[in-house]
Image (tube, rainbow, N blue to C red; front, side, top):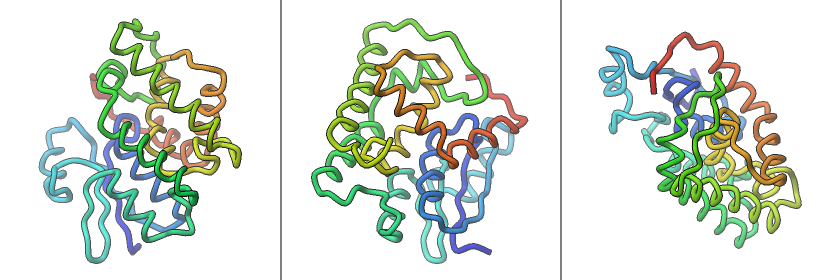
Length: 214
């Protein structure tokens, strides 16, 4: 039995689960995975067993239960400093935390109009005012982080960090909904989609039997 257990929802639909899972995978630590199928008759009962908030993801350790994606990522960054989950440079680290928090609390239109569905493609939604503004803001974040901090690799801060964990579901959404972005952001999206971790997650999503009407 591993020292860590991560409780997640459907890989095809659960964007928050993906964030916590990516952070844990990047540490290299072994962990047990418990998947709770969402939107099923038994879902609420199963969530109550594992999660104080009745939401996923949940990270269980020998002496703790952590039930929120960004908190999980912060805990893992503390426990595994060699994994580089935050940038070493203090300026880069501050901006990485800022854009991660912005993603964590914002972009309501993107979430509501483009729910995550990794095994299907859809026509691009109409770029109305609020949605267009959020897409443009995300594109701008990606471009500016890459321009200022991305010289060490293909990700927002060069190497893969929590900021990339936070935006990975958006990369999946933009790919599924065929959203046009700047050339620099398109290259970034391709880098995220080609990571072994994202490939593994998406393979799992494609193999799931559940279908949720979102």
